Image (cartoon, rainbow, N blue to C red; front, side, top):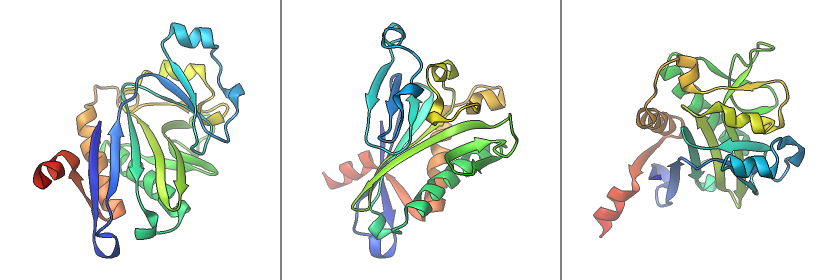
Length: 212
């Protein structure tokens, strides 16, 4: 797990915000507004494939987390930034769109569907590359995003991803047809996060060593 602290200028400077970047073992999670019918594979099949399943309290429907995927958990106090969940979600999406642009890909949004897509406006070609589902309590954000780098996309056959029918899921490696470095993608993503949220990311390990 990579834990970085956000430093903000101005009013939010004294508040500690965090961005956690992790890879999970194979797991399906169903959001509080999700429908269990969107879980296709039976419990027996999931056990055979070593996939866990949890109901969780984020928004959105069902999704997959697993190896080869960057799962990000921004823990931010939006009172110190901007008290607007629409702005927050669009900002997270913009980080992913900029990261795709770094690799020569054009990401976009699909009307009424949170997350980041390729060919979002072309019927039959829409491919989701980054899912998002958040929770916010007293303006503190929880949960976040899942960006497919070199994820085994066969795991998505066991669900209706995000409850959206007739649209596919993709990964950065599939789109580029070449091996992708997780570490490099994380660094690009962090730089774009700094630009969009107007902050500085500081490695938590370095912070602890300074304070000890």
